Image (cartoon, rainbow, N blue to C red; front, side):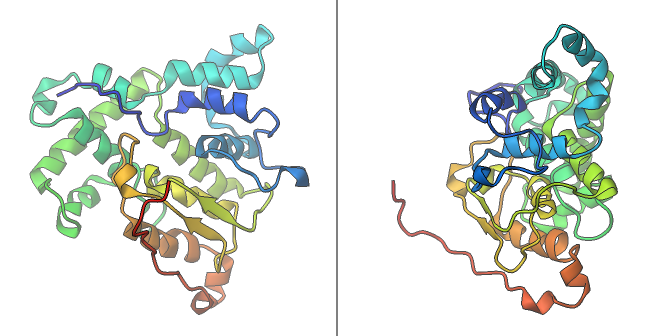
Length: 287
């Protein structure tokens, strides 16, 4: 079914408007931040915007035509980006309402299940080997039926991949984008240009259960302290973001494939000097 619930969609990008209001004193980039800005406490959405502002080519340059009139009317770039996000972002609600239309393809599925498969697995999984391309190929996605517990067999996954391809085609025609497109663009820019912003020594992520693996992997560019620089905290029972299928075990795998394997220290044979700590589970919810 295509029912739209009251639950928030995955990291709704137009919530960036609230972030920009809240973080007006923090620049939209990581270049030469004043020392007094640290420790830097920001939302993940603000982190994405700061990464985008650090790259030579912004993801939103593709929408410059739509934004140009806003510049000419004297609005700031931030305001123009906000407008672009409001007009062009595909959230779960948009997906369920406007993209969930081909009944021949979708009659055996519900919108929430398919959106989760697209966001968390087809576009949100980080490859264990090979270059990051922004999506799993059909064969790799279908083979997930053999690798993890799932109620989706190979036939169902093939049909979901057909829906995904149709969704991507419709989105391209409408000149719209989703958060995964933004994340993929950042990975591509940072891999080709390199990261030229400030490096940080420690990163603490709360509510990590609301992020995909490709979103978490972006942290490797801003922190190279692999021995003790990362702490991930979250509660899988409190996942509220639409489109997220999260397991803490996936972060451990990601740390080896996306963090350690791609760092200079790893390539110099220092792998054994890095120890992943055990996962600690709180026995009592303290509030």
